[in-house]
Image (cartoon, rainbow, N blue to C red; front, side, top):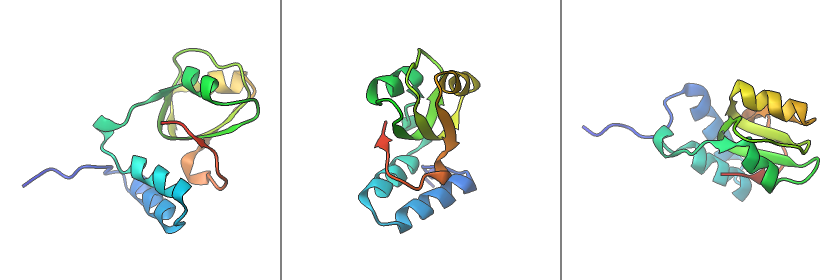
Length: 111
């Protein structure tokens, strides 16, 4: 019997269903990336967010944000999870760290 792939966390599964119900391409892309197995998800460093975003931008990361590197722009980041170092660096730059389930408006997707 093959092993199931994808998230086993019930909160993540509920988030995937919520995103799919919106039937907008933006939310469907996020749901597709959330449904991947943990092994195939690549964490995103704050440096990558800083390079992709502009000042006061909103960014969505369907995975974990790690604290490697620097960020100097104030950005609002929605992600599945954050490392403690990433939270500190984003807050120090004047940004916000919010859970992905609170995402209500479209943002840049960083994968």
